[in-house]
Amino acid sequence: MQLNLTRLLLSSCLLASLPLSAECLLESNGQCANAQLEAKNLRNAELKGIDLSGANLRHADLRHADLRGANLQNADLSYALLTRANLEKANLRGAKLDHAQMQAIAGWALFGQGASFFETDLSGANLTFARLTQAKLNAANLHAADFEMAWMNKTQLVGANLSDTNLQEAKLNHANLHQANMTGARIRFATFVDTFMEECIECPVDWSVPKHPVD
Image (cartoon, rainbow, N blue to C red; front, side):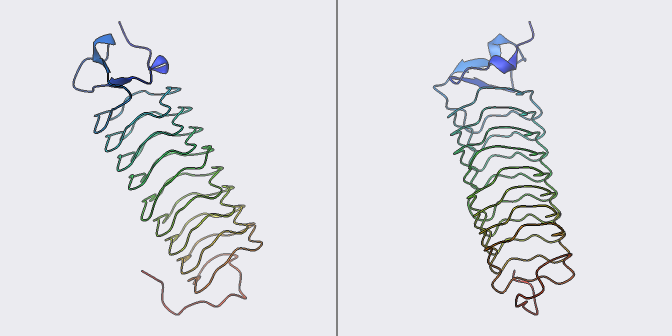
């Protein structure tokens, strides 16, 4: 019988090496580190507090999933569907999120330095207070996302869509906004010390711009 993964228990771990049935659930006290979950259907799954560190979640469907407090450190979420997932207090340090769909995600998450979001769709996401120092958001869709009071120092935003984004009180010092689009972005009290803005659309023109982007 096909397992309804929307009822996945917190103490269970789906093992991709076994058939997609009740037999592939193991009691693991929420410890699912390094689990192989590529392309699995985890939509609406209850994964609060579960340890998925190092897990392979490429192409997984995690739409509307409850990932509050989950440990996703070093997990591979490339191409995953995370639309409207709840990531409150989740640990995403070192996670791979390239090409992921993260529209309207909720909750303050810990991404850590150097997180990669290449071509990720974060439109409408709530990332207030997010720590995104040295994150790679090149070509990401950040339309209407909320980055109020976020730390985005040395963040790579080359070609990113920041239209209608809330960047109030955000820190973008030494960030790279080359060819980014900031049309309609709210930047009250945001800081842009030595931020690179060459060919940026609607970037604040009265800030000092370095001659070369920061690596």
